[in-house]
Length: 305
Image 1 (tube, one colour):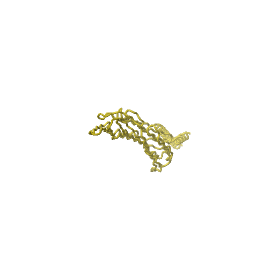
Image 2 (tube, helix red, strand yellow; image 1 turned 120 degrees about the vertical axis):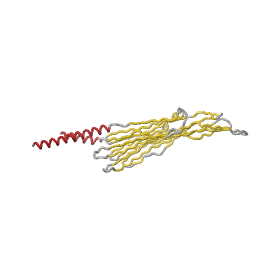
Image 3 (tube, rainbow, N blue to C red; image 1 turned 60 degrees about the vertical axis):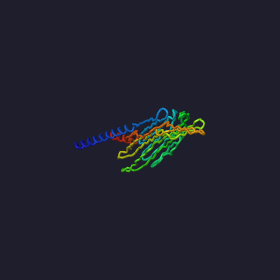
Image 4 (cartoon, rainbow, N blue to C red; image 1 turned 180 degrees about the horizontal axis):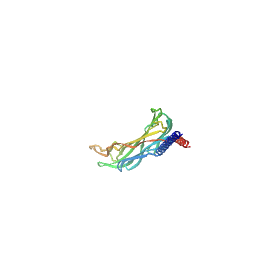
């Protein structure tokens, strides 16, 4: 009898330890899944006359076994002191077990939405959009090149597309591993036109300015690596920013009859751009599916009874 009681006591102790471990694991996983990631970065280039500002961001959200990542990028320009919305894009990717995905978003050139997408799928998928460009009206000013007054106008061509791919493979334990890449890519360049209201005079504009370039990438890997049925998500968001680069040059001349031609040239704007890569967010989290949480709590209650 004594040995039997001792064995029963050991069994109950093991049950209590197991129950406590499961409850602590459940609480830990539930706490982890509720933490949302939100990160952003901004960059301004140029000056008060001509330049651009870019803002990129990454946000995620978890609900049960669903993970959603949203990446966004936006660029606004200043062209001869005129403020312009250049381009913007937002791309979201939702993933659930086993390999159910939902991708949606939109891109804008200037203030206008040029395309959007909303698609649900299972398995491999490419949802990259075509590159779309739009010509925007810029500002104007008057400059002097030599003795000639020149009317200068700068227009802007903005381009944008959204890249998106999902690939599904199998892990060593036979469960799907889903990798998704999504994000907008945008750029904008300014070109000039000029005129002169002087008899026998003319003007040429050469060169262009790359105002800004932005490439935002969200990279997520969704998998169930172990025997515990809790998916793990690894996420990484990066941004590539290209700053103001190029030059615009004016050459004006007067070429009256019977008199030698006179010419004057002037570089109005000149910038030497660069490329910088930023890590916006990086990490991993283990999801806590709600049906599994209910089953764990039910089993704990049953043991305690």
